[in-house]
Every structure is written in structure tokens, then in C-alpha cells.
Image 1 (spheres, rainbow, N blue to C red):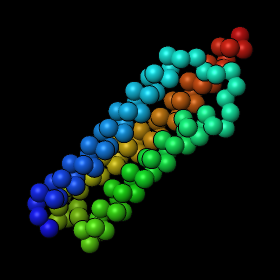
Image 2: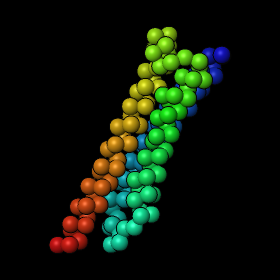
Image 3: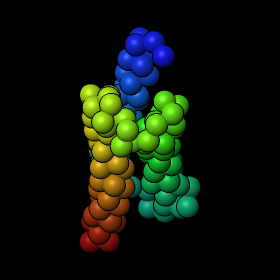
Length: 120
């Protein structure tokens, strides 16, 4: 396995992590500036909560399962033999996982607060 291929693979994963979290943060801030629709249906929940959760899950599976299997080793072996690559991969996965939990919680809190303001 050439060194450039490995650097490109980890660079692409880190770029995907950063772009995903950045895009979702921008969408979250934009959504806060708009009023919540009076009637939010199932489609709103799927688009705002479900789709980001699904993409986050795909990124986590790719980083924690697919890439180590491509190398033919477990995460423990990767941590022992390639600690710098492991830290990049695991750090990015932690970033995506934390944002995957925080983003829906903040979105639901914002929607609940908006609904309370409408009722008053």
C-alpha cells in the first residue's frame, strides 16, 4: 500500500467529517432564523432529524469498520502500528458522533421553544 494512498484516504475522511459537521452547523443556524412551520409533519422530522442521523451513522461505520477492514486489521492493531492515522480517524469519528447527538437535541429544543412562543 503506497503512502500517498493512505494519506489521501485519511485526508478524504477528515474532509468529509469537517464538511459534514460544518454543513449541518450552518443549516442549524439558518433554521433558527426562520419560524417553525405551524404544522410539522413526519417529513419534517425525517428531513431534520432522520437524514442527518443516517449520514452520521454511515460516516461512523466507514471510519470505524470499513477503513480498518480495508487495511486488514482491527482498530487495536491500527492504534498500535499507526497511531497518527488512528488518532485522526478516531478523533474525526468522535467529532461526528458528538455532533450527531448534539444537533438533534438542539434542533428539538429549538422547535419546542418556538412552539411555546407561538402558544403564548
